Length: 302
View 1 (cartoon, one colour):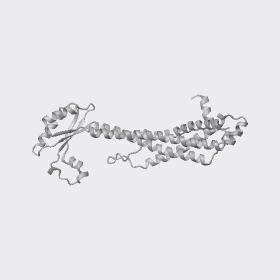
View 2 (spheres, rainbow, N blue to C red; view 1 turned 180 degrees about the horizontal axis):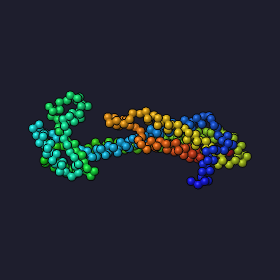
View 3 (cartoon, rainbow, N blue to C red; view 1 turned 45 degrees about the vertical axis):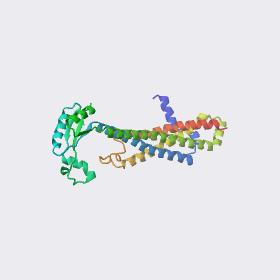
View 4 (cartoon, helix red, strand yellow; view 1 turned 90 degrees about the vertical axis):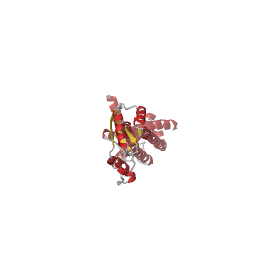
């Protein structure tokens, strides 16, 4: 960054005492700018957290489900063991299958426990035998495996989780998109409210602006004072909103395996730096919105 750029930024932050007098330091427009910036930044933090969390969820679901399958064997009790061993031999010979193992009675009881309780007598019920299949990164030919199983293990049914995986990943991806759309709408609403506040302040100070014009002040000089005040107000309000939003997210429950969809809304690692981008973006939005509003209003004033 060159020295003139640094000088201009310093002048913008420090401001001009004479020019600042035309911008009301308090009043409804000042409070509206601060409150709207804080509220919108607070909502932006949660929208950003939603986008990050659902993106993380979509990636995790896609990776976990894409590399696991389940083989279900339904057969008479006197054939279940033989068909299980036959299915394991087929899976061992199938390219793309990293490992395969039959679930024990205790593991199958744990799977059914949420629905039937802890005392389910698995060993006495005609429950299908489940085989957990783990794929290699390249995966296997599901259609070819089904054809071979139908010939060698007639009671086997392969579930490669495709019908479960796609809706879950699609839902998480759409939630992530919804989060980003919400952020755009939030910043658009912020720009509209700041524009209204700037227009109201300019209209309320029409007589002061007229006097400044009579003594030789240019519209760019006048506009700069309004742009500076509203940009800094928005930056301060957004910083407060982000701080409150981060504090609220820290109070939410942490991610848990039993409620991964409803908990764990937040950031991780370097992701906690993402909300810090919101105040500068809000200030940029305020800068552009106020500059456009001031240029338009000053052009229309007599």
